Image: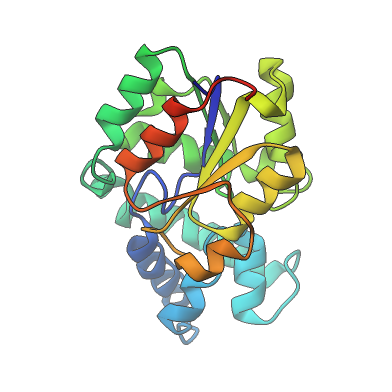
Length: 223
């Protein structure tokens, strides 16, 4: 059985993509700007917020315009998404995480959300206490798909990459896992479609969270 499971957050544990689109739309409205198309917003999910706003606004990620977008987004996310967090957990997540923890799997999160937002969402969803380590985008210099987030988790847990698996719904997650030397599980119920996930060569695909659990528990440590 896998020793460490590293989970993405949005689109993997919590069904937040629709709420994310609503929050981006509200943030643009608050700035007096036309909202981007929903599909354009969805294409940025999995990227750090400053890069998402930079792309959608066609400005530099470190510009003041992008920074204002991030500030607006974070405030509105607390109003729009957090109150709905418990009902947004994907089927099987709450019980599945509890079962993995009971079997000794160390649970962690590597997310493109800022640390405070990730902590708030996990807490609102009622699952924060399941995770030993949470790494947000602002805890690293280079967020996903760069390997730094995964490497930080492995280092903090003193765990070899061969004993860990990354679970995520975007190629950013799977590419990070490859760069770290981890196995990976691409979930098809999130943001990226199966064909796109396959371009990042995941170790496995899972169509439900129950299938995720099967992969995590079936593989011997370091096998």
